[in-house]
Image (cartoon, rainbow, N blue to C red):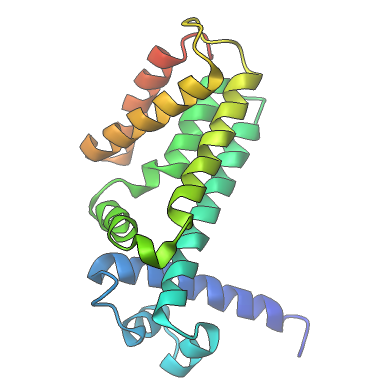
Length: 190
């Protein structure tokens, strides 16, 4: 095995996971076959089975991969203390939720809601991790004028973001409306 082979393997796995998530979102878990994913990832079906021994394991890995990327991106946005807290919160929500605005987003959300048995504790674990990141960032910033705790502000913003996500027609609208929410709930965070 050469030094570059692990990198090629990691890139292939990444490509498969991204293609799998989109394919599952497009057709639903039950209607998606391993052949569909292999075709979308431009890999042979035996090659796909070499990476993932079952459709359930592939599905779980694809969802976990996407959620892990989202949490990491949000963590980086919140850690950028050179920016005002308001901007960091909006960026974190955009990376966590904003990218899922539109038709594909609804399909990805439906996948996780209609297949909780396939995902197990993952469905609750990652949103909790995101909320903890928000709470820590808010707690480290200036206190909210309302006197609400950092945890209360974070939970309220998460709930508000869920509602905005359902109504927003675009990512840009989501970000703009979330900015209003951050200003209302976290007045003094700039």
